[in-house]
Length: 379
Image (tube, rainbow, N blue to C red; front, side, top):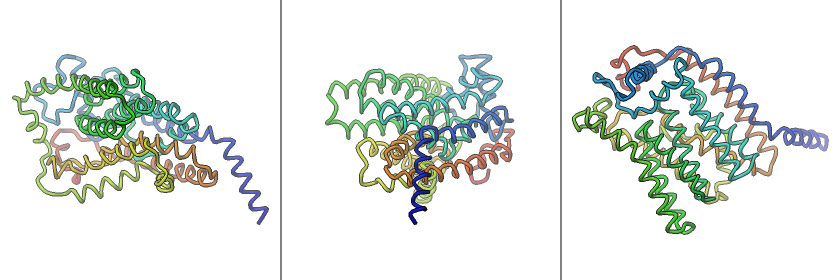
């Protein structure tokens, strides 16, 4: 029995020696996967965004062609693709890496270098992050900029500094020009955070934060004005005409997104549950952000009547969840528990890599808008 305890102690000591390098066990295989699939052929409806990028290369001032018949997303994605032609996946991967770096830097600033390393591992081992870091969709782009905005705002609440507020505002603008869902989610989150944090803030600081958010909406306002001009001032009707849903599905959708929320947090969820009674103010703000995302997307079909239900919509929660997971892993006093969670994360990473491989090798390539228009459960 004593000998067994000695072996356990040796394992724990060995783990502590390599602990600060643990993130490399996650980063290296993921980087290898990205390198293998960076030039993979287009799948699903990626061709549409690449075609839009080709259009703005010819005419930068016309982001949407006159015969465009698909969801009028904000145009940032195809302008980004232009910068990385002929490797469109590199545009998405770049935003993903920016998100990874922002998560690490925020964790380091707020909780130290060890938490930063664990945050990297937690983000890499989160649902959809590996796959959609290469998929030429708006989802990773908006998730990355939403994360940078939320992370900078969270750091501003903790440490103040005009630079952090400026970064948050710029990232907010970029997120709003990537996908419309960024606006209600981030505005709701920041309003709630300011309300919760109001006693720690001076009135001038609150005014500064609100003013920066108002100014950050100006680029989106110009885009919507442009859309109203080309859609006959029926922007909302044009948008909803693509996917129209009439019915009540909020319980079904809530169950769907709740399941994928847990998968997005990943194995560190064990530490979330273990420390649920010890969570501080920052952790509660992060949980509030996660819940806002969950409730918003669960309401898309029932409240907004949009037939859209995809697990990838939850990508914006992954970085902030990873920030919290990194802190909890770094603070965990029981080395054996910490090592066990990291081991489970590594097993989960293997599953995510296999899943991502299957996605790129088996996913169809749609050849027309008509194929894309099939409801999600049919394709």
